Amino acid sequence: MKIAVMVSGGGTNLQAIIDSIADGRITNTEICLVYSNNPNAYAIERARKAGVPYVVKSPKEFENRSDFNDALLQILQDAAPDLIVLAGCLVVIPEQVVKAFPNRIINIHPSLIPSFCGTGYYGLKVHEKALERGVRVSGATVHFVDEGTDTGPIILQKPVMIRQDDTPEVLQKRIMEQAEWKILPMAIDFIANNRVTVKDHRVIIEGYDPDALF
Image (cartoon, rainbow, N blue to C red; front, side, top):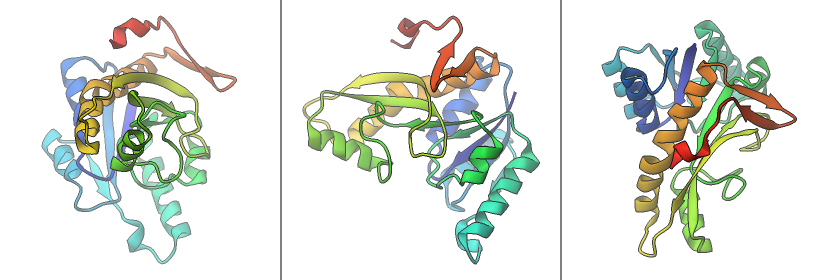
C-alpha cells in the first residue's frame, strides 16, 4: 500500500510512521509522498532524512483558495496513494479531495472524539480545553475523514489519564507518546492488510483486540 502523509509542523507522527515501517509494526506499506503546507515544517527534514519524496505548497502561493484546492488535489492524484494520512496537518481538506479519496483519508486527533473536537480544536487548544473542563481522561482518536470536521467514522481510540499537575504541553506530550504514536501506525497497518471495512458509519476491524492497545 502506498500512503501520502500530510503535515504542517514538527512531524512527530510522521516519524512514528517512518519508524513503524522500518521496525515492522506497519507492514505492506511505503510512503510515496510527504506533503506540507508549511515550508518551515521540521517534518520536511524528517522526510528528507528518510529519503521520502516531499512537496511543499502553501495556500499563500495562490490568488485564491479554489486554485490552491485544485493544486492540492493534483499533487495527491499525481502521487496516487492508496491512503492519505493527516498527521498534524492544519490545512482544511477540500471537499473535492475528500470525494476523490472516499474512506481513503485518515486523521489523528488528540482527544477522544466526540469530546474536544470540531472547528477550532487543534494542537494545544484541544488540551487547554480538556484541562479547563476538568476531565479525568483524554486520549487520541484515528478516524476516517469525511466532509465534516472530525465527524468521520472512528477507527481506533486510546485513553490517557489526566494528572492533576498537567499543563497543556505536558498532556500533549504524554498523549502523543502513549496514544498517537501507537494507534496511528496500528490503524495504517490494519488498513494495509485489508482488515478494515466501513458499514453504516461504523468501522469493523477483522481480528480486532482492544486489549492490544493497553
